[in-house]
Image (cartoon, rainbow, N blue to C red; front, side, top):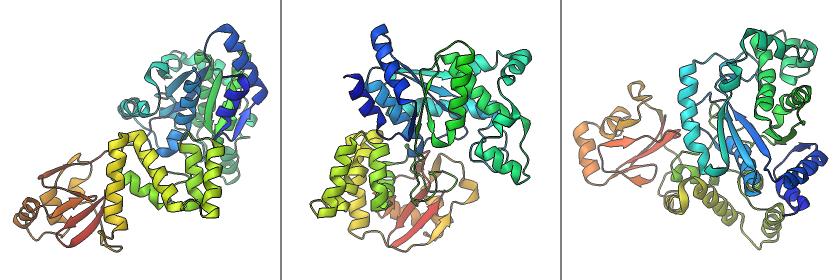
Length: 405
């Protein structure tokens, strides 16, 4: 591909490129040198699982890989201890290093659902940040002023509101910038809320005699509500490890308008193809429901393969479109004694939430094939809870309940 063709491919789903001229020059330079660009994106493992909001960045890394470049999936085992203050109205509660490393292992398993393993470096910023020591950290801090750091919107807002800003939070953008120096990044990817940090990385690289990285930002993906940022804490997320039937159903929940944004940020379709879909829907040449089914199939295929996508579609058509699941049902919380368990005794759960009057009745219904979980018939005594599942839709004979995990 020519440099112009590469730029066209990389622009899709980008909010801003700082600067496009520099990216053009870097692509041409690396082609002459015969070495790929080093494209960095950092993730702090503050939760064990990734959702589709995270994959907007990961997919852009894949686009660079498609062009022959190297993706650096950076796990912030040190910056995760600091806690990213971006978008925060208060200081993040600290996490232990053990929690960080445990979550990091799940990230390493999940990213290769999208990225090419052979063109990916997985790095931990503890490799260089832990070696800085006191003197090194002081020298790092000398690269920025308090006035500069207060230019960040979130810090400015908290300062004006009189909300405390812990000193260690000022270290976050500096340590993220140091990551770019240590990795000699050509490009750093981040959400639009990360622009300040990415630009600080450019300046720190220049101070260290390196070429400034190109800063590329991607939009923040809205959650299922179409309003707020996709977030597990808000319950508006689609986890990449959720069962295909849950993932498919959640994609089908989004609005028609949001569907095109998901097409842009979560698939490899070109902008021209997406615009053609929009026009077909407007003229009646294509039904929006069919387009949404196609989106759900594409997303499920990415994470569960064609068989998983087919299963998700079949369950959705059966339990939602064919009205096999009632529109209204009791919404219950998982019993406290079962929270955190990866394997649940279905007979005990059915009894605990009031669907079965006794364990014996639950067992009879299980043997009679009259129990389903998330639209799938279940006859076993135990149920393996998917790590990203947020709910279980239980059917017990003619009774239904939605159980929040």
